[in-house]
Image 1 (spheres, rainbow, N blue to C red):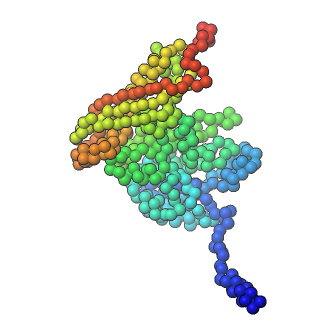
Image 2 (image 1 turned 180 degrees about the horizontal axis):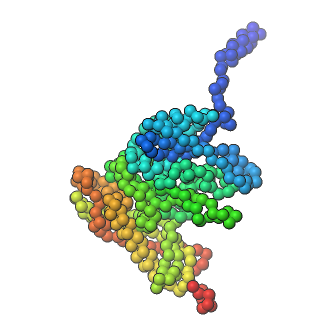
Image 3 (image 1 turned 120 degrees about the horizontal axis):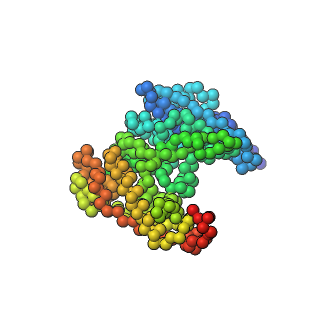
Length: 391
């Protein structure tokens, strides 16, 4: 009995020393940030932060759809450094800010032109900011980009800004990039980093006969050796998707006598870049293998013609985009990176003169191999509709 009494006293005494989580904040007592935007204006860093009501996310599947839009709060801070901008943003906060859920980082074009490296220290040093966030550039006011452009009844977190990979799987054009990939490619001296440009489009969707804004990716920013290397709109980038092995679903229209006859969806792209001449003016051979999935047939046309026309179009688009990059002094296809990985000594010979650029004759040969792998639930044939119904 005496031993049991002593054990109880020891237990009670030990419990008195347990302080517990007295400083723990409740979930509802924090302001959760979901996106950052960084600009540079009037010799000051301008930091934008988007915060979202997380209750709208948690209740989305538990309650009937809400016909009103979830409000988005945007905080703004300015300062001579990013930390001072963050401090100025926090000083006016009514409740503590939590940075652990930031999933998107947006650089304004002015920031890219000034100096991206200046932003790395705080973004990499601060433990709560993760490396998995998406990275975008923009030419629009960041406050407008961070506003709510989601579909009615959905949280702002269900948008292109926070889930770009889902849209890319349905239409592969410009691949989204995560921060850890951006950082790793940024520090390699041979790499040209491609950052998607996000903007606002107001004339594609309607709600009750009124146009509503949507976010869209309408081009890229190129960064080479730490410096901004230009903006390229979508029209200049038609060949970029065919040089990307991550392309999952890209479209192509097959024409005959300038009339559409079929549409293809390209999948399983495999790209092989081989240096065939090295030195100060290297040249490369490109071999591309891909599968074509026939989505539409709008006329009597052979499989061989579909393959041939697809190969001609893809080669033309690849060369066109390459020349657009060369004209701006930008290696959009990463030929210098291929040289660096396959023959580092040849790359050193090329790169010892920092003014050296990939030239227009660097793309010496392009070989496209399209395999028609699928025609959906129907055979690859054309149905004989009445003449007046034909396109």
